[in-house]
Length: 287
Image (cartoon, rainbow, N blue to C red; front, side):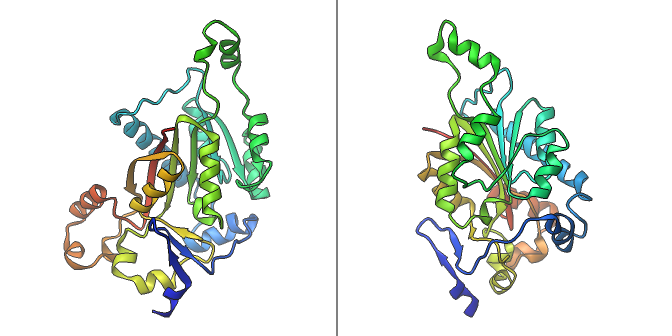
């Protein structure tokens, strides 16, 4: 397969697309490019995007409850940063659950749209040198945290850093994957949570149709992960993968005995093995 020459794989199992190029995420993407992929514009897909946001938040909460790790959400509301916040639909849903929200979005169109809906959004790349300062300015410690820090027992004050960082189909668009994960780790407090959605090569398209996977690989995706390679990558930056699950189910793309499974069985098997062309992942910062 000649196209395979355009890819390289790291020792952690991350697949890098050597010919990837960044694209312009202006109004044309949210109004046109998105529609060409999904059949409707990003704005017209609001109901579905909100449903996905609620589902991810519900899943995060259920994993936290069932895990052995203690997540100390502050009473005044946990701080949330969404990388690639787009038009702010996820921020809306998170804010309704008590999060203090902030977005970072490279698109001027999407940033302005979210601001007009009442959100704080930094129009910048997540890897911008000025991002750390901007986050500190737009998401300062709450009055309760500040009073606790000044009062008795200040040695138990709230740790610096974000409680939750979220990114949905965003991280694969960054050329420097190491810098992205390093910055995520720097911004998170110990015990902070990372909630992701991203493509996965541990799914039927790559496993059963590698030629099609290569031929249809998005030109602006620099890296592809499996649950295993994501866990290894996160570990390098002081994070532990708590759980992953497929976010899509395509038995028609499967091969062998999987192809003949009843759909309900295929779904259950895929959930058990985190087998899908896209995945959601939840991690915790452990150091």
